[in-house]
Image 1 (spheres, one colour):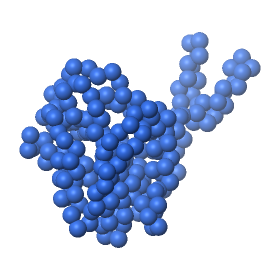
Image 2 (image 1 turned 180 degrees about the vertical axis):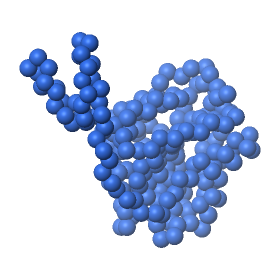
Image 3 (image 1 turned 90 degrees about the horizontal axis):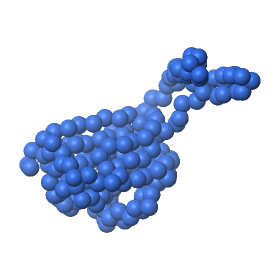
Length: 209
C-alpha cells in the first residue's frame, strides 16, 4: 500500500512553469469509404458524392472512456496512462489545464491523498479548502489546494467518485492561473466540455490487478 501511495502522489503533480510554444501542425489525412469506393482527403476538405457535398472534418474533441468514467476532452490534450500493482492513472495534459483520473484497488480516503500532495508542493505554499462541484449530473465532494510556487498560482481540485466495485476512484483538475489569479481560458472551455458529456458507467465487480 505504501508503494501504491508513493507512486500515486508522484503522478498527481504535473506542474510546469515553462512557456508554451505553439506551432501549426500539418493537416491530417482522412480515409473515407462510401459504398465500397474509397476517398483520401485532408481535414476540412469538401467531397462531392452523387451531387451531395460532404465536408470531412476531424472533431475538436476526443472521448475518454476508461475505468468507470466517460467524457469528452479537447483533442490537443496529451494522453498518458500508468499502471502499477493496485493502481491505475490516466492523465490528460493541456497547456494550462490538466485532468487526471485515478483508480486504486483498496479503500483510500481523499484527505490522505490531499495531505501527501500538500507535502509535495510544500506546506508553506498551500492552503486547502472544501470544494463541492456538479460535474454533469453528478455532485462531487472534494478539496481544493491553492498553490503559489515560484511566483505562479495554480489550483488543484480533487474529488472522490463513489463506486460499488471495491476500488477507490478520484478525478482531479489542475489549473495554472492567469497573472491576475483568474481561471485560465483553457480550464473554462475544458470543464464546459466535460460537464456536457460526463457520465459514470455502470459499476462492475472488478478490481485493479
